[in-house]
Image (cartoon, rainbow, N blue to C red; front, side, top):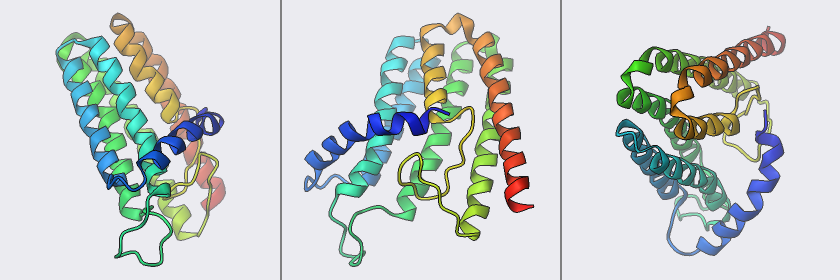
Length: 211
């Protein structure tokens, strides 16, 4: 819900960093991989109840997640893409979305490992993430088949369908559980409900657009 509004604020510093990195040999996929590695460290920290370390690592990981696209747009393309003006690629977009969804669910799984008394609500929240993720990606597949395009959240590798719970809201919730771990059941219940509402909204949108 907030991604499109926050994008103009985020893009300017990320583009500045990407321009500074141009010519350094750092590729977008390296940035994606490093961000995912930081996400794994964040998950491990949560599993050991190192909540504030996890918070810092989550934020760092998400900065890398935003930076990889900026680096792709500002980096000179490799020779195997002679007609390209940047290193933006479908493979890079694929890596990005796979690492994102593994990151989101992995953080919740790690929280449950460290606090097994919250495992049931963690399972519920991961279930809700599956709903938002599958409705998002299934819509993108059909939209690509029909040559639809949507770039309100910035230039993307595929159609970005909006909803109540998007990346910004999910990152906020992951940070929230690091700061207030005792409130996890309440946070999971509220955010999970919002995820289910997002899933329902996307299903209805798909019915209107593709029916």
